[in-house]
Length: 358
Image 1 (tube, rainbow, N blue to C red):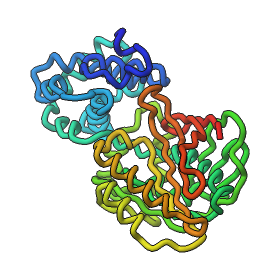
Image 2: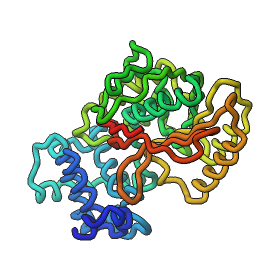
Image 3: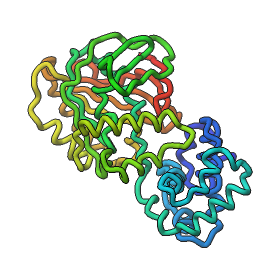
């Protein structure tokens, strides 16, 4: 475990499957999710089974932890429980089975029984489309409002089901500052640390997003898959997802099935109304983009920023993991006038708290 618990800068260098599983289990424990921790730790026992998923897990190439491999397959097990395919897993998720040996035995048995059912869960990273992250994005918009004006057109990449794309319908309480519609059915009031964000008005005049594999919240099977990525202990997150599903059923978010690079290119090429800031934003997804795509988006934004004017401004909001410190940082760039990166806050990855630095 020394390597998994090493310096912050080395965390994402873990490539050993065993170390990645152990680190992820310890991380779940530290995050107050002991049932999830036992489930993830049982993947070490799964590695010893004669199954296809054990071979796939054991032969994973690349940065196993950065690819979130333990969480991919753990979500598959959770899905088996949520669908009723394997109700015995509820003993683990509800904290009724706490002996790791018993957990290992049940998870290994389940792996053998549902081998080929679980295998496709390796194929894509976790779809952690968490509404709580919108609190950070809204705080950034309030900050930007004082620089560029109150009107924004939002464009989200890696939008998954588009939950955060719908943030214009959420109500927020951010360090005592209210934002969004007061009667919003989805209310976000994270623990706020530090000064409150500036109480500037925000008007979201348009919002759209993209994802290479968007999730349709109005499709029961797809929504259930999204729920599988939520840790069983996270009852508040599950409740927020249920509320987001209700919002989408009334008016679904506008999400294109499209590569992030192509989406940004089209966004920047489209006509822009005066007095409205065009905003690119994303939350906890940048690491999943190929490096060439990240570089292309950065170059495109900087080139477009150089041509931005006070009448037609451009902004870039990101809530992403700092790969050296493993902290989740809210950063903003804007044009004209704020070309450099502004660190506004650090935040919990699921929106439980925000520490304002802006």
